[in-house]
Length: 551
Image 1 (cartoon, rainbow, N blue to C red):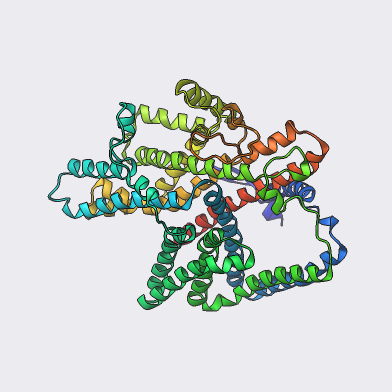
Image 2 (cartoon, rainbow, N blue to C red):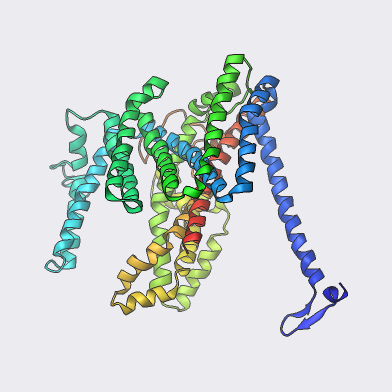
């Protein structure tokens, strides 16, 4: 022991002591545990106010304890002792089901309240036609010059989306002569039902992915069977959903986003991981235990918690009465804002990262840009709100508080984060892979497209999702650009006023600062926001872990 604690010297490192190193390690562990415990206490305190578990009957707690908690803990403990990988497989199945259910609910809000399925279908077709034209034109790239192909593709995209003369002619005061393909599809007198359009646009791509995966894992016949089964399940959901109280449109979305992907994940694990199949027992116990507990408490007449996070809260708009207040329009507004933010920040951020890492020379100008991007990542969000107000509202003359202004402002907020995370992902690609690509005769662009981007994409996507998680909880920029705190109607276009979940909770805590709102609506809104944030972060964590295993 005396030898262990005796200080020694190493060249370049100064005095070395194992005792100091051990003490430092445990100090870091204590600091980490302290932060986690404090955060956990805060979340439990808020969740207790929102869900109020102690208001339930003792019989309700006992029933779920016996049907859900005890079997789940017993199964998890057994799997942990026998097969940790099986436990991870079962946990991933449960997590995938819960997160996909949450995202399918958000998508259902989008299609039910904001975006008609016919409009969605029309614009998908309007994008698909010129895309197919561009793919077909690639066959003649040796005969047709690049600029000619670029002009032809741009013209086809313009005609398909805007018609003639389109927005350019509108600026010149010219009347529309040729309607766009999207407008023509929407004007057709006979169109399929909404659930049919969603089956084609959502269910068919999901079924294609499932079929392609099982074709690669097993064989072609298995892939075809899996793809047809997935498509059949999505189509059948439109008829099964109404029998259990779910409309055809949300049932189709639920099957496409949650049920089919989860079933495909289970089937893939069952086929490719035979030693870990027992892990699905955990998912079965969790689902069966929750359903059995719900049936028993209803049959026995036990009252559950008087939770403020219920279906009424998630599907109602604001009210001056805390008991009737809901978050529905704010949830829809947050979804639209995040779609706008992702559409603006992702291509710009990834493009800037690619240029800075792969093309930009190492000189004073690029180093000046690097320093400023790092500094902009730490600028307070309220400054970006002032920037959005001055740039988009004052200078460009846009209406304050709209989807476009709010999304563009939040995109500016997370743009430095997206650039930094994308650069790190691109920088992590081994340089030997680039050199091997050059050695085979590939150009710079071919190397970036075929080697760098596919390898760096998981890291880029992870950083983008984490950045979106920050944007979805921001309040100060939205306040500065004049977004309404309370909104009773749903936005229908980019120029519509929009609210968001953090703004709604802020209004409950400030303008409606009564004990009822503090004790009921505010905790419920915080729980919903934290749940959405954790779901987004969980997707990023899964992508990161999968990427690390592949490397």
